[in-house]
Length: 323
Ligand code: UT7
Image 1 (cartoon, rainbow, N blue to C red):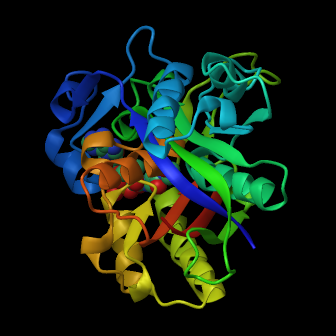
Image 2 (cartoon, rainbow, N blue to C red):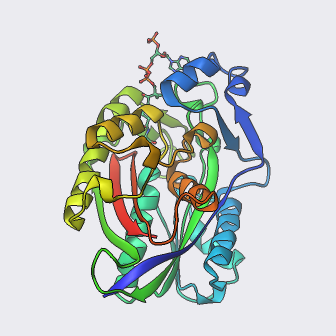
């Protein structure tokens, strides 16, 4: 049985760090409020010349080095982003160009904060069907560019960055002992498309627009949806929550992570949390957190990892993999 094995990871953050106290000079908020309600202390904000494309390319190069895979071997690039450099073409094609890759296919996936889970599941399906043999899956965002910096209910939450995985096809025996992606589940419910959205677009306002969110409404659905999809993936794989070595969640709010952990009985020491210093980086948050935990030695080869996310649409999903 073909498996998509995670051979390498990499990430990239803009140079500039913005603390809560920096934001409190722009809008009526405080370090205490932001920490108590979200767990965020600081986030990175893209400067001039730093874009989704440049962050994605930097993360991809590091992932290729960590995987020991040459760019010339890559035949699939998927970039998960809601903040592309241009409305079209796909940022993935610009990444393909910047890496000097002339074979295979490159496209973007847009599922907001669930984008990385959607992109990884898509890449896994293309690898297992034989359409691709080596993939770069990237989550890259510059949400600072679509924030309304007068709106304290949203501008305190988000940050910029990118993370990348290199996946390669390998034969497995079809059991949970295999390395690679073992199970995944994607979900969406479009009835809630107007709870977290951007108020502009090429076909409507002909502008880019700003992020708008009914935070309390999103929060309400987040814990239930995430817990339910994790449960489905775990049942499908025939394992228990306690078998998972590391949970690498989308980083939206510390209270959401705690709520899911409590509901499913997850040991909080097994959750990788980078929210405090990254903020919510949307599709980039999972690979950014994963890369940090690989680099500091927490996530080891052969361990079981569970990735999960929920975001605009609403979209949500979870993936179980053996690293
Ligand atoms: O990644 C995609 C998914 N996104 C999410 O999962 C985000 C989900 N939502 C959340 O994380 C939370 O709802 C927020 C962090 C956005 C807000 O926290 P909350 O506990 O739901 O606060 P709230 O919206 O109920 O607001 C409570 C109070 C309000 O004042 P009143 O009406 O009680 O007087 C707000 O005006 O806090 C006020 N407030 C603020 N005060 C200081 C809202 N934003 C701020 C702020 N600083 N930045």
